[in-house]
Structure formats: C-alpha cells, structure tokens
Image (cartoon, rainbow, N blue to C red; front, side, top):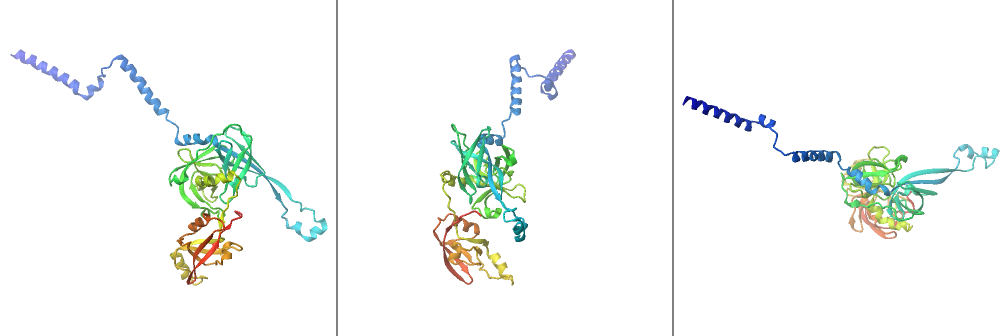
Length: 398
C-alpha cells in the first residue's frame, strides 16, 4: 500500500508538471507553434510584402493634383516699348532752351520692358487663360510649355476690369493637354489650395495652403478699379505666379492667381474660375466686355456709425441712423452727377430692393446692363426721395 501511494503520488506530480507546462505563459512562449515547412516558408514573403506596402506608400494628394494639370501650365514672357520723356526741370527752363535750343535734351527715349507671368491651357487648339496685367499692352508674347516648346502668342481679348485675358498660340500642331476646370462656387473656407506657376522666373513651382476666405471684395484688397470678389488663400503667390491656376485637392482649377498684399505674408488672391468661365468665350472672340457704373465713391453705413457721426459736434452733416450706402463723393461727368446725387446721400434701396452695404450696391450695378435706369431710394437730410440714375460704361480700369 505504501508503495502504491508513492507510485500514485509520483504519477500525480508528473501530471501536474505537464499541466503547468501547457498552461504557463512562460513555457508557452518557448514552445513553437506546430507548422509544416511549406507554411513556414510562405509566411516570410507575407511579412516582406507588408513591409513593402508601408515603404511604397502612394504619392501625396498634392503630387497627384499637380500631375493632373502640370502639362497644361505655361510660362508667358512679354516685351513692350515704353516712351520716356525727360523729367529734369532744367530741360524745361526757358533760359536753358534759349541757349541750347529746343531739341537739346528733350528727345524721348524708348525703353524695352520685359515681363513674365503664368497661364494655363483651356482649349487643345492653343487657347491660354491668364491675367490682363500679364499681357496688356505687350508688343510680343512668347509662351513656353512645360516640355520646353515655345510659341508666339496673340492676345485675343483683354478685360482690365476683371483682370482676365486670353492668348492664342500660333503654329500649334495636334491637340494640347487641357486643364480641368472646377467649380469655384463649390469650395469652402479651409479647403486645400494649391498654387502653380512660375514665380520670379522659377518654372513649375508648387505651393500649398488653404482657402482663407471667399468673396473678398477687390476694394478691400486695395484694388478699387476692379470688379471682383476674390478667393483669398495663404498658398504662397509671388511675382510671376500671376495668371497661373489655383487648384483644389482633386487637381481642378478653381481660381486664377492674381495679387498679393505687399505689406503681409500668406495673403494672396485669386479670381474665381466661374468668373472667368462667364467671360472666356467673349474674350476668345475679341469682344469688348462692358462694365456699367454710376460714378460715386461710397462706404457702408450702419446705425452705430451714424450715431457716432451725429454725436461729433464737428461733423459737417447729420446722417440718418439706418443701414445703407453713404455717398462719400460724386465724380464729375458721371451718371450719378447727371442724376443730381450729392455728397452725404444715403442709398437704402435700388428698384425697391433693400441695400445694406457697399458690396451689395456694387454687385447690383455690375449685374445691370449699360444704359439701364436704376431707381435709388435716397435719404437726404430729413427727406426720402427717388433718384433715377442711368448706368454708363466704365471706359477704363484706371
């Protein structure tokens, strides 16, 4: 019996020892999983493939967007002749002219000015869209494609007020790649913005940022002679970028890079592509774009601003405490002057529709055909009256 108990005890100890070997984590780590040789060999390529997938990640969305449009972007080089006349007062002095003669020192000098900008192809036949200020008044226009080919260009149409121009390339054989145009009404603040162009002569440069704001009036930007609501972006835009495309994350053109604020960093402006779409066909045909105007300088008036003005004992006029547009100046020989508008008038409605700020006023005028009459509701002193103004044609962006 004693021997039996010893045997049974030894057997139980062995069983318990094997049980610990199966369940103990420390031991389990040392026991390899039962695999056959082929499976073990197959496992190694799977691990290598996973590592390869991590190292061979796809390009960024910026690279893919630029790849989508890169071959359609061009560099534009221009030359124009400028006549410079002497400005030295001595040359205009009567004693100097009597002594040396009228022709001495007074001959004008011709200078050749060179400029550079960007553009992009919108039609395979060689139609380029760019800024008006890039090609306006140019004697010669040379366009270089990304692949190095250079062509002479003819300026088909220019609209200074919207700062848009169309150039037609000469000697095109076959079809050129065309930039995909997006929808600038579909973008939002915070969306990605990719600027592409040739800044300061550095071809094919790409910068990345976001849409900072939308519908920034050109007057707020410091360009009161334009009729534009800009896209504002912090994507770096530099001289030479003008006329190049602003892209969305999909590589579609949503704007045309146009201007920067010289007194700030990270503030650039682009013309919405939908604005360009509305004018491009007419510019290709060489049509003149008519822009209506009334001829006033104005600012937005609010009840708060009016109250502050009226509390000032030195204020020359009392203003109605309303929302509207305050006339700051009536320009001579303009439709507004002919209609009898005055400094201090406050416009509160156009054709019976309320007007609450200067941008709204400008938009209504811009969307009115030249020669159409606008009935302005005007607060003048203690009276409300209707002033009818017939819109004229804005002759120059100056």
